[in-house]
Amino acid sequence: MKLGLVVDLDTCVGCHACATACKQWNTSGTIGPLSDERPHGKDPSGSWLNRIHSYEVGDSPHSKTVNIPMSCMHCETADCVTVCPTGASYKREEDGIVLIDQDKCMGCNLCSWACPYGARELDPNSGTMKKCTLCVDRIYDEQLPEAERQPACVLTCPTSSRVFGDFDDPDSEVSRLTRERAGQQLMPELGYNPVNTYLPPRIPKQQDSMSVSPMQGVRQLVNRIINR
Amino acid sequence: MHPAFSVLIFTVTSGAGYGLLAWLGAGQLLGFTQTLTVNQQIVIGLMAMVLVSIGLASSTMHLANPKNAWRSFSRFRTSWLSREAVFAILLYPVAGLYAAAIFWQWSGINILAGLSMILALVTLFTTSMIYASLKTIRQWNTPMVPALFMAYALISGGVLFLAVDAFFGTLKPQLQAVVMGLVVITLALKLVYFFWQGKPQGATIQTATGFSQASVRLLDAGHSAPTFLNREFGYQVAADQLLRLRVIMTLVTFIVPLALVYCVFGGLVGAELLGLAWLIMMAGLLLERWLFFAEARHVVRLYQGEQRT
Ligand code: SF4
Ligand code: SF4
Ligand code: SF4
Image (cartoon, rainbow over all chains, first blue to last red):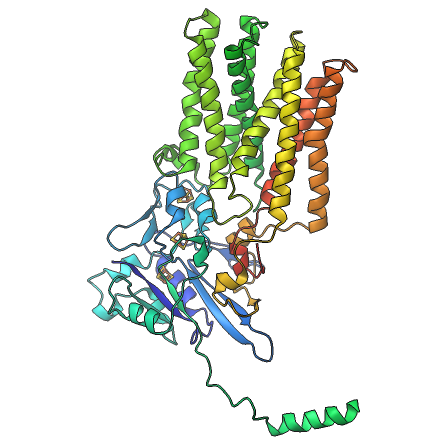
């Protein structure tokens, strides 16, 4: 198995619900509390396993806002694991999930240096590294109803922009989406082979390039008269 | 990259220590320590190990959870940091045996001298590979980094060896010439490194976000105050400031010590100035290491809005 996420950049509205749900679930999960510094102060800080950045792509007026949520990509060539001297970081054979054993980590930060995607953050309180667990404590939990054996971020996303599944199975939804919507890896040239893929925004229906709206026609006419 | 002071101290001091030990071992093999008494040789070895130990102690200070530091020996097969830890510890008994061999004039002394020298160099190499193996930082991901780290250790250890040699009254002009030559080679390599580093290359905000055909600008980083990632990777220094520091670093690390050693070599000034030359070089190397971090631009910065690394 090769478990991971597909994120739809066409529909993601950048609401941060996934990041919040992730923090809420994992702070009482397998890797211990995700601690915060000065949570009610002027400059609150703390460890998060998922963050959302918003970008303007293209040039105005033809630009588009794109929100890119970033959590661990559970890379196939995970250098974060290779560099770890203590063996705290590991990648599971059976499903490819990259995890950190909190009891072994010495907080040297090296794995966060080796990660290109900013997926690893040092917990200021425990002094150990924290990262996305792919909600390993949900997806296999047989106590949960089957429909809820999904990562917290996936369940909570109001626009269903996050999909969880097995990339090794060609018929899974993640494989299908990646295939049909040309899902792509971020920064593939670094060679980490990230498992998570991102679906690019759909291209809006092409407008007839010759048609000019009435207002624009008037503006052009005025401009031409003024310039004369 | 954020220049953590403990890491600067660690790499510079232990580098000089390993360099000094390498020179002592080389002296045994090539015969230029024959002018030194047994006690003098042991003093040099001790100085080397004290420098190394100060560095290693400092390196543990940047661990956020040092109680697990002993586990760092466990991934020798994959992790350069683990290899460094193993070789650094292995050097102690070997250097101890070398000291014993000097003291009692064992017949196997050459083997132990050679072994100490090789272990010192291998440890240096493993340290530098921690940085050079990171694909995420193009300024570090080059064979020039291990070459430079070894060269810095050899010149700082070399000038210290000269200073101590002079203190014992056995200064050798040939050795001075060799060290001066090494300083010049190191300087040349550093200049090549600076030139290479300035060339635009590597990942961009386009490849980071996947929008390879369009301009991409950060609108909102998603957090109101700096995060761990900003603090660790977002270190910013103004370009003109960096340029000024590069010039100062080049003068203090290479030019001034080189001039001092040369003046001693030519008999213009007293040999006690070699100690001063070493101190100046060490200050320059601290600045060099600071720059090594401050100028390293991790690809995570692309997600934080930078256009290229
Ligand atoms: S995204 Fe980063 S932390 Fe996750 S597997 Fe890849 S390199 Fe490791
Ligand atoms: S911070 Fe922890 S998990 Fe990361 S490399 Fe160091 S010991 Fe391994
Ligand atoms: S899979 Fe779980 S741990 Fe990973 S980002 Fe989603 S909620 Fe967070």
